[in-house]
Length: 267
Image (cartoon, rainbow, N blue to C red; front, side, top):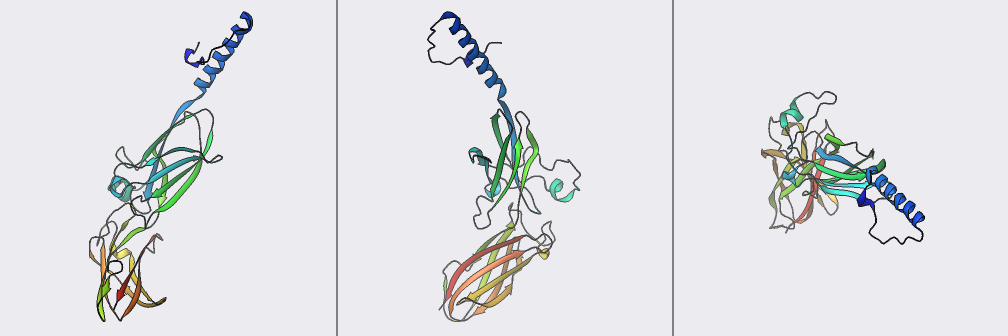
């Protein structure tokens, strides 16, 4: 079969008819071989919160980067798009080997390549993209084989932690005199899934504390209780000074952790 599109556009000057004929055939054969050697290869990449669901559009997605592991050339990049997945399938039903836990609506990034040889790649996920204080980078490496798609659940990178956002006190807020200060934080899984009493992500399973530092020394430690869905709160009495507030969430069963920090003043 002659591949006409493989003939270069540059003009071929034929010094001799016989030589020119074989040069023409050589170029056509090589062009056909290269065209046929490249095969489209599709790879689905997903990011999944540890002990929770997939990271999709509702939390800004996960930034995905696929690089040639040897040359560091970026081969594909994008953001996971879609839902967090089916709660029952992911969190309630037992998972057997090779059983798919995502569906066609579940957040993911589909990369497409034209490969002419097996290529060793590094795949990175930075997530949650829109929660910078909780975002982590997870990665893996594998061989991509021309024409051999990786679809279904695809490559799943686990994103550990909690998203912790301090709501009160506001950064650099000043309180007058000795004062009872209300501390409040919004805490979710890294997929944005809510934490509530007696839910799949049960607030009773997590330790949430506020640590207060003054002049570099810890002066107060306060357990924060669930006030409403994903909101934990408590109050502390503080004397005058400049304070650093650190709030952490910890799951002793999974090892998930999350932290946020702020500073405020008591005059």
